[in-house]
Every structure is written in structure tokens, then in C-alpha cells.
Length: 244
Figure (cartoon, rainbow, N blue to C red):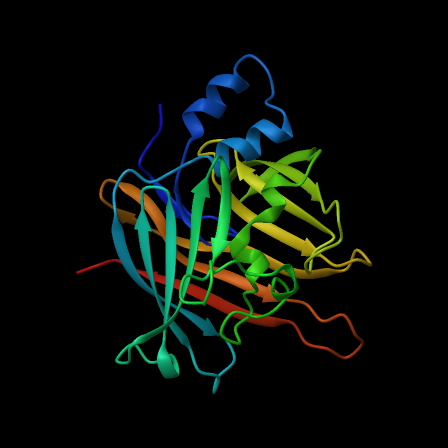
């Protein structure tokens, strides 16, 4: 049984229904493996098409926001960006995260050819924001041999903390720690570390909002951490607006 409650999951930034009933039922008899917990997250899908406006907004005063539109469909989500970063202009970039044969595939349909995004772009920033292509592609959900670290409180409830280790070194993260809510089955927090095991990125849900009888993300805080002395922590908000 799957509930039509929606969040944008951390690192993938796509909208997925919460699937806590399956996990809670397992928890009554045994603790699900780290692999089972992540599979429960990534195989979730939306039952209806929806469109939401949003923005990536730097916390620092004076920096411009990046408007975006999200089109949620049965097997994935599209992220639409606008020419000149103005919602009044035409769409000039589309990123599509789609479930294909049990795995999420990130493409850029507006590109020539099949739209495949090469691995060397996964460390690049999307539209100059603090979000990189790796965060949307969610490859860490498929890295082999994830393991439980502990159970701890995260955003108001107990969550499994799971460590995912990069098997090939491609992309910006050598390992990713994720917190999955025991109640909802949703990702509520993520920390990404570089090859020297330094924390370089974190995602955490700040607030949620009621939508169609369920809950979905309203605001997420994205922090980027410096890797050199004297650097400053960057803070960016991802905000989602409900349709009128």
C-alpha cells in the first residue's frame, strides 16, 4: 500500500510519495536492511500529473534567485528553467528524471542527440546555483552495499541514518549519508562528502505544507561547505509554491 503524500527527496530533488506503511510493517518484525530502505524510497512514484513553480534562492542579500517549474508525472519529474532566469521568458533548459527499468535516468531533452548528461557534468552547478547535477541524478541511491550507521532523531522523528559509498569515484561525492524517516519512508536529510571525507554539501527540510490531503515540501535548506581555510558556508533555499 502506498500513500499519495509528496516530498522532494534530498539530493534528487524530485517529488515522490511517502511509503512508510511498507517500512513500518517490516519494522514490527525486523529492521529492514539499508538496501531495502533505499529501494523503498527510489521506487516510489506519483499517481497523478502536477505542476509546481519554485525557486532556488540564495540566502545572501544581493544574489538573484533562479526560478524553476516542476512537472510531476507518473514515472518521474521534469525541471524547467527560463531564459535569463526570468519566468516571463521562454524555457531554455529542461532536465528530466525518469524511472526506467527500476532506475532513475537523468537526461536533458533540450540537448541534441539522446540528451544523455556525461558524468563529467555531474559536479557542475545547475544554473550557477548550489545544486549540482549529481544532486538531481541521485546516483547514490544505487551505490552498492549501503549500510546502517544508527537510528537518530531527524526533523521531528526517528530516522535511519544510512551511508552510501561511491564505488567508482565519479562525481563530487565520495560518500553520502542519508536520513530516512521511519514513519514516512522519505529522505529528510543528506550530507555529501568529498574524496578527503570533508563535508561539502548538506540538504535538510525546513518546512512542509498541506496539499491534497497530504504533505509536501515548502522549504529546503541547502548548505555548501568550504574546503579551504577562511572559506564561508553558503546557504541556499529551495522553495516550492502550491498552484492557485
